Amino acid sequence: MFSESVTSGVDLLEKRTKKLFGVDTDPSQIFVDDDASSLYSQTIIEKQYRNTQSLPEYLEAEIDREKYGESSIITSLKEKALPDINRSSQQAQLVLRKNTQDIQAQQLIKAQAQTAGLYSHMEKPEWHAPWKLMRVIVGHTGWVRSVAVEPENKWFATGSADRTIKVWDLVSGKLKLTLTGHIMAVRGLVISDRHPYLFSGSEDKTVKCWDLEKNQIIRDYHGHLSSVYSVDLHPTIDIIATAGRDSVVRVWDIRSRTPIHTLTGHTSTITNVKCLPTDPQIISTSMDGTVRLYDLVAGKCMKTLTHHRKAVRGMCVHPQEYAFATASSDSIRQWKLPEAQLLNNCAPVESNKIINTLSVNQKGVLFSGADDGTLGFFDWRTGHQFQAAKNEPTPGSLDSESAVLASTFDNSGLRLITCTADKTIKIWKEDEMSTPETDPGLPWDPTTRIID
Image (cartoon, rainbow, N blue to C red; front, side, top):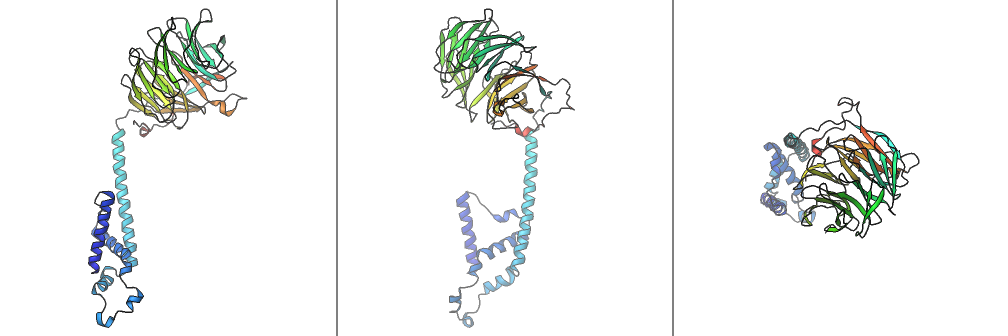
């Protein structure tokens, strides 16, 4: 009777396991030899049926032992199956531990082989010289929120929370001109490469066109219901795209100030808008965590990218490749155009930082600036971060004012301009004296390149 109960008990356990997990689970399969399996079974029998090997005292007293005798099955189990239950249990545990370790080692070797095969085809990143601070420019009295470089690479302009636009000499860093006219912070700037015009967007809900030959405002574009955070010119036709807190992208004719399109779809503040010469001709990023690509002719959204899990604040377009990058606090993602196929998912060394700005140059250096002053430099082709730095606020500024708010490379790609919350503009250059031996950069780990 006892052996039948053991068998039925094991069958019951197997049925319950199948019902719970939908698979056949035989614990003895983890052992590599029969002795280990036998010891395991004996231990299970001893633990699960210990209470059934002897009767309770009140029943034991009522049994006439001389008449019935002791069960031969129980005697057999005591003498043969479990001669020394403690010793058998210890042996079973040792064998179980040894076999478990062997299995774990085999799984580790298998995983390492799979990983090696998965990443063996990935190219190693190109070596880039580290970037170092070359100049600090002081002049604004508020946070510096925007920057644009003139097409001939002689000067650049910055917009600030002090409501002014300042023009600086790119070589010397000296102030050339101050433009006033906005009544709130200047959040977006773009300079035309076909006309002597500079366009600015502000928190005062207006977009202004400045004639750089006369240094005065010649046009205003009214229509936004809230702050304008980003402006960009189309590369080939005379239109400008603007976007901001009212969650729409507005497209204007530059000369007539006629609104051409109002592009909808975003549900929160639009942080960036970029224009391209071919479809999709307008790309926008938003605090709603999405990236939208628009058909300019039809005035409709062609595609919505929802890969980011948090607000998308940074975006840049590659100057030579037909690709762009977007950034949020979870990752930096690179996209191939026109289909917006995901190329890379860069993993910054210090993740979960609010990345405010992205820039990329012709040499394939991708830059990111974060809210805590973190600077990241990446190899565009592989997504590898080769340098991490920190923006130090100027003396007299608060630690919280180290945030990098805007950035751009000059047209040669040799200088990086960053705008910060400590009211300064910083210019960075590659260290010409560095070599791969003296400055190898951050180590490359191909497993951090995850595409999902």
